[in-house]
Image 1 (cartoon, rainbow, N blue to C red):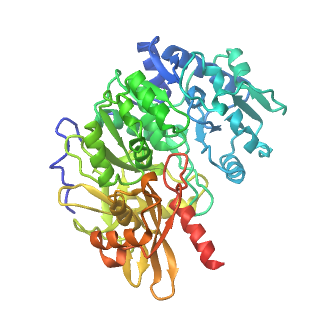
Image 2: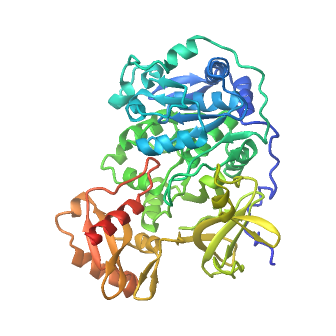
Image 3: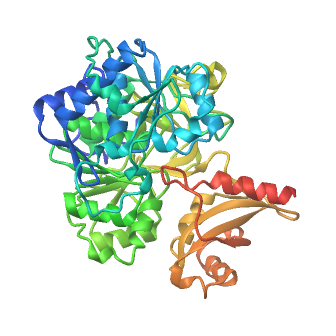
Amino acid sequence: MSEPNLTFWPQRLPRHLELPETSLWFNLEVSATRFPDKTAIVFYDSKLSYAQLRRSAEYLAGYLQKECGVQRGDRVALLLHNSPQSVIAYYAIVRADAMVVPISSMSTAAELEHIITDCGARVLVISQDLLQRAQALPSGLQQVIVACYSDYLSTATDLAIPEWVAAVRQDLTEPRQRKWADVLSMQLQPRPHLATQDDYCVMPYTSGTTGMPKGCIQRHRNVMHTTVALARWHEKQAEECVLSVLPFFHVTGMQTGMNMPVYLGATFVILPRWDREVAAKLIARHRVTGWTIVPTILIDLLSSPDLDRYDLSSLRSLGGGGAAMPEAIARKLQQMCGLTYIEGYGLSETMAPTHINPPDRPKPQCLGLPIFDTDSRVIDPLTLDQLPAGATGEIITRGPQVFDGYWRQSAASAEAFVTVDGQRFFRTGDLGYVDEEGYFFYVDRLKRMINAAGFKVWPAEVEAKLYAHPAVQEAVIISAPDNRRGETVKAVVVLRPQARATVTADQLTEWSREHMAAYKVPRLWEFVDALPKSASGKVQWRLLQEQEQQRSTK
């Protein structure tokens, strides 16, 4: 077995990372001790210091332990948009030696009920704007702590604040509900902190694309690895100011927008929901230096007709993942801001990154190199044989950030791992290849391939090509049934506003024939005003695919 190609490993970085042998809580304790008066959180121009953040988290932890009976290893569910409360609650739960169960703010009532029942949480922390969705909660849920975002809007601002964020505190009607403000006003002190690096820390749930969502068991050491790795890889310091837009319930937002800044003692500017005008103002106003986003968010920002009005010169680093950055958008970013988008790769099962591009030598549309102490390979998904450079297969990974398995899902956990060369690797379910220089590239999901008359079409590749068309703002590729080809390629496209009255499907077809192989050219085109997106900004291609299948069935 050949050793990984380390020729282009950043020379400034070690291959092995020494991790703190502590729980995640200690990161906040250290930063609050070092920088007590420093601004930790900016929320629509209102500020919260590190001392205030720590004190609030301790009060909530005390309440969880003494009033809710939360014990070491218990699960506490969290259903909040990005806010000061979401950070306080996250760290309060780990301070109480319990396990955070972050739930997507876009979860349906059925998904919410499933997750709370599955993880066995007896306490839920929720915002009042989401409370209606949680009316029929499982009987095992004993207490619901309800947060009001406007409690932390202490400073007047000219920023556009959504009504549901600015809403005043509402009265509660159910006996098991408690107001956040009342809980913290009790100022209960928690018991001594007992959790170690081997205790349960957080359990994000998968998106549920193959059945009901599954909980990914992550211990403090898993979360600590990518927290520290992100800071080291990008050479971040306490002086950083991070814009936190990606939701904290998603591992990328959690690690880059919350846990990494807390570890550094940096400032993070929180935005509960994407708003490109507010985001641009916040970057300029608070001199934001770093930002992790998905391509769809960047595409929207760069499409703003008012972009030239905002000073984005403080930005020094920009990166993310979730989907390959289209070459045309990356080029526009470089031209307008002088920045290179640094792509990375990871999953809920790996607490965000397993791969990141070296900032000093990135490659476009590339996952990057396996990070510290991480071993990744490409194998034949059937024979499990390792494939040579350039050959497409399934990406497998092992490292300190890889999860233990799925909560109460022994069969699914067993299927998620494979033994190669005597080592246990996680099967990502993603197809990709590694080049001669050791860089990994994503091709598509293992189950997303379109088989058009025997020709394999990878939707991600066609999407990347379409973004180069000047009239295309966004595009997603799905399959459609075809009597002759079995499956055919369909494009769902959002055109730029100025092109919507003039650009036709025939024109896009002709352009596509000039830029890609004939079998990859979309045979069907659907123009829409917007693509459905998840709370983290990813295009929900599965939803479009399901809708297409339903139409064909009818």
